[in-house]
Length: 277
Image (tube, rainbow, N blue to C red):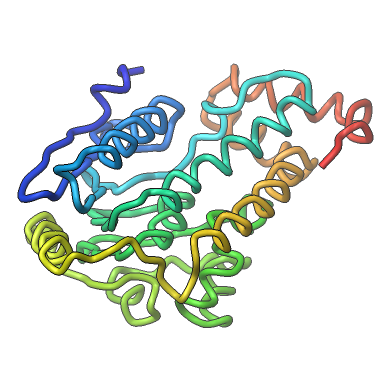
């Protein structure tokens, strides 16, 4: 795995700091290393007086293929694993909720799972025409995360939110996402970086403060994130999810991570009643 400092490109121009995920070989997936790198870079941008707005984007064909569960979860005592899932999921989305300056997501290609829901916690989302947005939680047998259980319905409407979060798993294109209110702008692929910089600079010029879409507040979103993280931890340790991950990892011949899920599944009758929320 590349060291965290090699996973991002960071530059600042006219008080706008742009963080570019730079792991196109892994489709900019949110591995443990990527998340540590993002957390560090965003923390430095938050403390940097020269940074008055932030842009987050990616290199290559994908914005981000999402969280690699097999690569982020480690085999251990189920209660410890349960608590770690809550801790890491909550910290992931609090990273975006707590960022103190205006933040624009520039989606350069397909976005899957947490990279979609975290984007909606920011001030705006501008997407290249090639972008798509997928939240396959129902297909994976897990509940919505990233405040999407509440926030999606506010940004779009109940029917559209259910299409994306429910069994259909609708994957809108950039134009469709704009039409339903998921994102705030669409531009040709070649113009994405220029438009993101222009928009962020306009925020700086106008003295824009950090805001949340859909009338949400920081404290409200943090409360939703905390509740969703507990529900997610319980779902991650349920038989349907463990079986699904085992089957997927075996199909990819990733035998090491698959063994973790097999061990949890086989021993589940022994430890499941001991879990506390």
